[in-house]
Length: 141
Image (cartoon, rainbow, N blue to C red; front, side, top):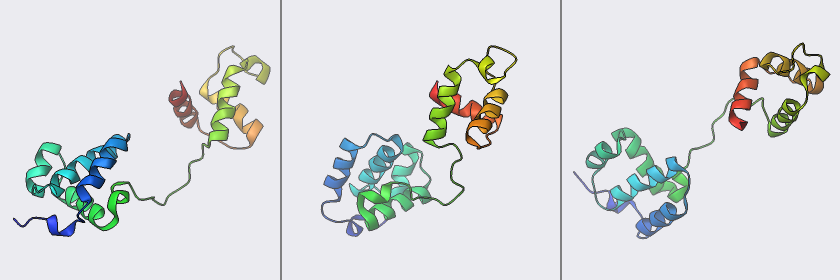
């Protein structure tokens, strides 16, 4: 087993300690802890088991840190469909929930996800499914 020390800059440990002190995101904190252990001299196969990382995943994060520094510990942006529910749409939905459903043509005095989606389409023109409405409400409540 050859040590990986030669791949890191001299200030790698102090950089990782700074990341550990100032990071609040659990995923990044965990990656920084594992990479710090490897930079400290432990071998990847020894470190991966107690931290429950696959060797390949740990090797990837160590290489990302060696090449990019602390920014290598964060997830890279991914392509994909942009989210349909924006912050503005979320605010409108929350304002709508605070209103009386009878004013909007509902048959009962309690909102249903179906009725909220229907009224939201009328107000904004953006069609959301019942499940999307439910997820937004669950997140904000």
